[in-house]
Length: 111
Length: 113
Image (tube, rainbow over all chains, first blue to last red; front, side, top):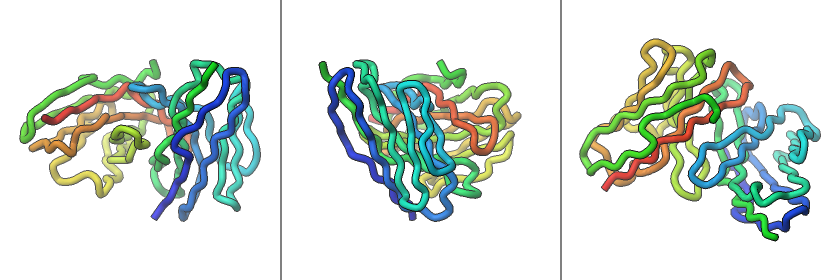
């Protein structure tokens, strides 16, 4: 089976940096997506990591270590609008690119 | 707006009734996925299509559930004899190919009373 773990909740201050971790145990790992989901809305794409290392995209960066089964999403210069659920999802080889999601991390940004 | 649309956005039905949801993906996307999401959980995969072919169905998809994509464009998801446990957000997503990001629609929220 597959196991994907994320913290349930995190709180951070506006302007700060926050790191949201995701660990996974899967067979046939191909890549890892991060999505953002505001309450009552659809998930929106943030990043996709296939190779080890850091991918930076504006205020958001994502890191992957395939050997450790570990990824993180780094959010810089936090804004109130970043309050949302952050979902990590793995893609398996031969799985038709279907996504297997973790439960999501609910991030609350405070003043 | 991601370009993926779903209809209806909300559906309230009584237990035992049948419901059908529609998804219109981004037009050039050949892959279409259905997921189900309950409160506080991540989306769970239900089924996916490549063009009109349904290539995989999750074990979550009991025989009361059926999905179609007759012309490789829009898709429908039907739930027969609904149960209270079917109450959830049903999300549709589309992508161009393997490894590409999936674009999600706004979802259909189903409430079974």
